[in-house]
Amino acid sequence: MTENTTAATVVSFDEAKDLAGRDLGYTEWREVTQQMVDTFADATDDHQWIHVDPERAKDGPFGAPIAHGFLTLSLIIPFWSELFDVTDVKTKVNYGLDKVRFTSPVKVGSRIRMKGVISDVQEVKGNGLHLVTDGTIEIEGEERPAVVATFLSRFYA
Image 1: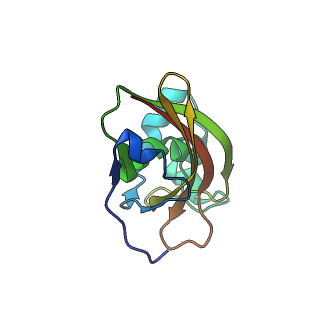
Image 2: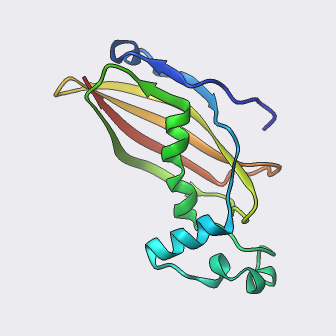
């Protein structure tokens, strides 16, 4: 986890066709705050004490409040935008996820970042490209990542 962040990979639609295997590098670090956790709890109606009660969470299994796993997962979207973009397209779509694992909790106050590798690119009907990206969300100073996910995106020219 000592690698530096890299500039975003920005390519044309035609250039994106040849990106299978491309390592996109790392995003900048982003702090997970209690305000983010509380806002996510309000949006999802998930107010479990381990997330939203810092005093009680101090005595919990992690010694501090932790982010919801799905909050951490949702940060793939801004991280992805930081790592990659395709120009000259009409539509960009978050298509879904093939696999997600929450491998380590993210304590409030921790900093996280994502590493992305485009593992596959396929042409799809409608003049589109389907990208499969392996994303790993790391926690600064921790051996195990927070999230390991294979996510899917589409770009239409």
